[in-house]
Length: 493
RNA sequence: GGCGCUAUCGUCUAGGGGUUAGGACGGGUGGUUCUCAGCCAUCAAACCGGGGUUCGAAUCCCCGUAGCGCUACCA
Image (tube, rainbow, N blue to C red; front, top):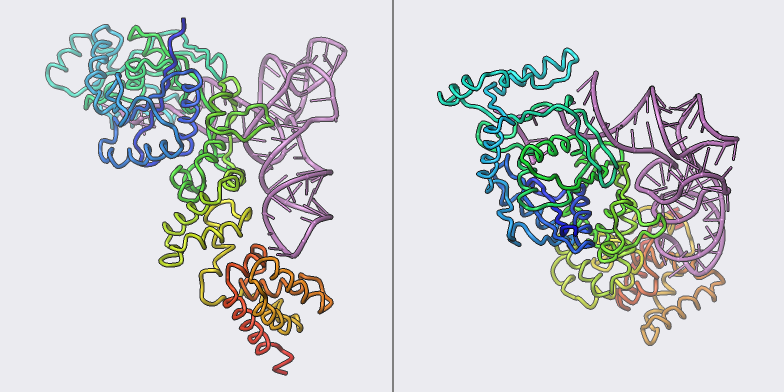
């Protein structure tokens, strides 16, 4: 009988959820859901005790947005709390004292600044910067005496001889010689635990069965395993996930662009797309299928298909995937997202936004061209201005066509009369004009597009005309024609 | 410096003793078409290097090399 799976995501409150952390959280979540287990969220706030509140919000927001609901942790509670390390200080101190009394750890009176100097000196000499066990050589009497005297001390773990190895869930057997590990501080002078120690104490207290984390933790693992053993505990299973790198192959960071999931959200990335994309960073189903909902992922995810190599974050592919999801959304949802985007950026405000029906028509017309909300204005900005100012290049093209002005005028006249003012009659009139002029429809449509939108690219022209309405369409066509005539070289010469 | 992990198209990856080494993003070309997007078709693009083992190695082993990580009283 195997015990129920319990996994955890244990971020430190940095203020935002990094995509690397999000990927780790996702894999933990998937693993828990798949095994009917429990996903625990624990906050590792033993160092920075300021601003935890605010910093926590970003993390929780990111996880919630992705849909990674935790079963135990902040706001959720649970039987193994508290879920903030800053509130569990007593248990670390207790555990550390126990190791001290059992002779598995020792007091270290060394001055941190001094330690730092020694480390740097060793490094400069090309030697491994291990702690030299100065304080381990103190006799029990000396150590006790100095402690009694009130000398400040940290507690160091005495790394046993031998080697440490474990069966990693993603990498197989990993082995370290203990001689390469040094006696790590487990309890600092200020009674706060260090990361490795707190993680061990908590993972045990929270009954964690599988520790799935970034492979930057791989060399912490032998230390933690030794700690478990010293405490008389059974270590959990470990699985180390490959890192996520930036396009230049170094650890993904702000200078590569957006790294926090909320930044992607604010950029119009959909949570479904983000989850799907993240899942494929370091994991693959069969190399063929790539589109998965989070529910499907919980069905098909497996640790033995997790890759061992670091993955470079491909922003283009995320964008593509977002398009896949965005286009599949119902019209009203897309309109909601566009409205929210326009509002939050203040790109469009007031009455224009309030006409929801119109916005929806515009979104419909833009259709597949949009991969994310921010692209709406690229295809629809002209709908929301009094007068278009054509872009220079398209305008120059129009100027170069001597017949453009006349055609625009003719089109204006036709559209002024066309009844009813609907898609098909408008199309018929426009194509009719082209036919009577003896040119292809494009010869009428492109000038109209430039006159109406100021750009060479837009939704279908008849949709644009409909959206603009008869009056504005006719007005813009005529205005463009007049301006063309005024600027035409033939005229001025 | 030490220790550890990793190594298939530009990127994410599938595969794995005998394959035309597959898919996706991105890129090229063609088609659809009023432009763009989309869609369809199509092309280019990879097994880090060297030694073994083997009838046969991209695949297994060793050695290099490279990248990344850790080497804190940070997490």
